[in-house]
Length: 494
Image (cartoon, rainbow, N blue to C red):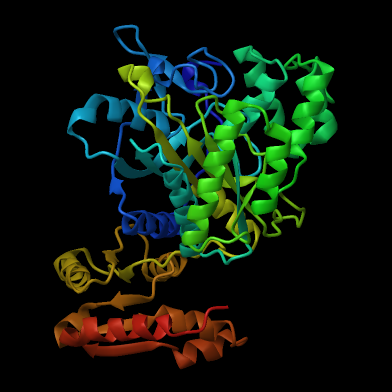
């Protein structure tokens, strides 16, 4: 086959989704709601570029230090590796390091935009998705962590969730570090293996995690994953730790019994105690946030408090099968990330909303279905010689704040009306020669026409009634269409 004969198959890469207006409207509503919450709490907006140098991401990639694994990377013309940002935290660390002398301290910023991960896609898990983050850089106080959790809860409710629909689970990396130190585990590689093993608890269960804490695990396909290599005593200590259970004050007491004797563990307990006190002051009870030692977060850069928010809603796919989306917001403390650039310790903590995943989960729960996006008013184009009049009508509607367009295809009257109906236009403006000569316009109320046509079985009767069509003076066009749109907005939603 010659190049001229080749026809590529029209297909989107796995993990990348096409979004029409209805999908985008849902995501934008979530972004707008959460961003307003961030701003009310005093966080400043910041936008960074899509690419970062791979060495700025460093070893904080999900599974490998190679610059072309876990992320989408390419070499610049100077042979430096650049990667599409994996999250919004690493770019913030680079920005803070570059501008630290001129920033207010602590620096409180929020950001939103697409991020890219070269990972296996799954339900609600994409290779490109939208995040909305807030971070405090320059505060070591545990109260800064508590503030993000409380703000995250407010963000969920602003996005449309009710109390009881979500739960934040909070832990501290220092507790697990102290436990491992007491068990004689010093190797950084083993510690990272433990984090990755425990992070898979929901998916693999206790038996699967036990294998990954030890020598390793073979999955159903026969592929073998090397384990952390802990001895039996250390494995059982970690398993006992993660099985303490979720709660607030009682959980802290049980954690103290397990982690006692470790200086780092004691420090983590003290910080969780201060988070508990702050959450109580912020009005966040155990119905919205609990302490859960099984939460460790897989990324290596976390140094203290870590947290995830799970949806408690029942979610199903289009076939009615149950679907689990996992965490839809997460975060924690990363006190060493900015220091990679500056060499000076700069504490930081942050939270990230997975907007695309949250939108997908809300749809799967039936809470936030994709809306049919409203189209513009369509001005029907009858005559090439009258295009000036058509464009003037559309411009007048737009000047009044009403979306409008002139039909610019090459079809006749009937296909133009079908086009307007498919666009979900509220109305069509008809200006034939007679209307222009008489100084009038004919307006077809397409919303009313759709409603009536669904109730009238006899097409001949429907045509005779000409539902929703009126002729008004040209200078009353805007007012008449505004009235149609206002009436539609008052209609009860199904």
